[in-house]
Image 1 (tube, rainbow, N blue to C red):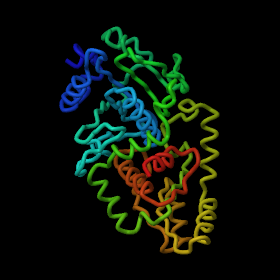
Image 2 (cartoon, one colour):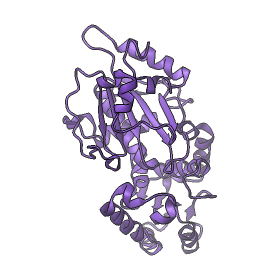
Image 3 (cartoon, one colour):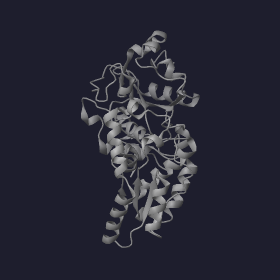
Image 4 (cartoon, rainbow, N blue to C red):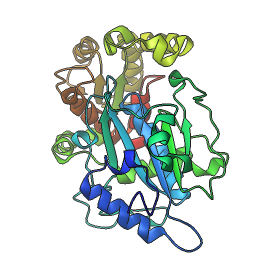
Length: 346
């Protein structure tokens, strides 16, 4: 029925797990009425964890404001080699919440995230013609691709116009959406929705809870994003993926996220408030070690065993991310989507 009644493309419908298929069917049927067909939005989140959460936050608002059911397409690739459910609770709002979670007047308590996961051997092609040829349902999908590396008119600034009479929307992005109606997605409601609905998987949340018992909420969060692109994702051609200018700017900001710059700012903070302690997260273990030496008994951190994009490393990364979001103030790195994600969740 997802395909025949609600025109959900086979590529999406077949890759949802059975429970998610059932929930999507129930939600679409409850939305359908004589005046408006049930509507779907598929957001294909890309690049690293911070970029994906930025795109998800924007899509949450867009889907809610246009009354669409949201499906997340989550690739396991060189940027994030971890499944969505290995990092986050599949229940929107978290398993342990005791009361309904409402965002924009709509309760999402008890709803699962609807997630399609795939690896690089089974991607959605761009343009979509190969899919259209085997499943004409894709002809009724308004498709937007913000990932310019894909070519074929992919455009980071593509404007999403009025879609009142279109049932399904597909957006591939690592960025905030750009609707013609700017009120459909903006910083404050995007962040509120992300905070209300995204929860860590229970074992990871327990690690954050233990940090809170050590005074996390009274600390200043520090995120040092220093690792250069060559050592960050070794198999990545950064200039091809991000463009020459963006890669150069990214490298410049990562070099500025140095031990000396952060240490100087931390000293200034202590001068204003002598009792200040810090929660520090960094992709460079050497910087973390130097900060601990320079600020004895003032720094809390987790023991990071690795800094790659593997599933195990990303579990540590999301603990850092949600811990940073719990601090009272954030001292972050420019041009870092991870710092941005901590701000969105905080």
